Image 1 (cartoon, helix red, strand yellow):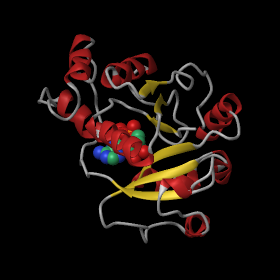
Image 2 (cartoon, helix red, strand yellow):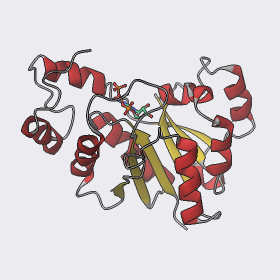
Image 3 (tube, helix red, strand yellow):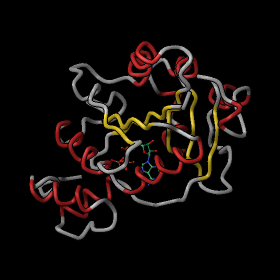
Length: 215
Ligand code: ATP
C-alpha cells in the first residue's frame, strides 16, 4: 500500500518552496499521492487576507499536471477553524487504520508543533516528515516536550515506519521563498516571477490579488 502525504498550509500564495518540498518528499518516501490542504481559518495565526476560494484555486493551478498531487478542499469548506488533528482524524476514518500517512512539515512549522491543538494526538494519526536543511538534523531549537516525543519516534528512512507514529527528518533542497515576501513584492508592484508558477501568477494578476496588501 503506497503511503499518502498530507501537506497543509495557508498557501497565500502557494510557491516553489512548497512544491519542491512536496515533490522531494513524494520521491524520497515513495508517496503515491500528496494531498495539498489549504487552511480555511488557521487557528494559530491571523486570518489569511486572501479568500480561501482563491487560495484553493491557486493550489489547483500550481499542481495541475502532476499526477500524484491533489488539492483537498475540506478545510476551506469547513466554517470552523481548521485543526490538523481534525483533518487527520477524518482522513484516517476514510482511508482506514492500515494506510500509511505522512504529514509533511517545514522545520519552522515542526518546531511550533507543541502550540497546535491536541498536538500529541497527531502522532497517533500519522507519521511526520520534517523538511530540514541539509546537515541541519534535529534542531537544538526543539522545545523539550517535542524533543522527548521525537526521541522515541525517530526513524532514519520511511520504510521503517508503520501507518503512523514515526518522525523522519529529510534533507530537502533549501529554497528561501516565503509567501510573505511574495505578497510584499506584489504589493509594491515588483516582480514575483520565478518564485512561483506562472499559472499562479497569472491567476493573481487576473484577480488583482495582493495589490492592496499591507503587512
Ligand atoms: P507565510 O510567509 O505567509 O508565513 P509560507 O510561505 O511560510 O507563508 P505556509 O503556507 O505558511 O507558507 O507554509 C506551509 C508549509 O510549507 C509549512 O510546513 C512551512 O514550513 C512550509 N514551507 C513554507 N515555505 C517553505 C520553503 N521555502 N521551503 C520549504 N518549506 C516551506
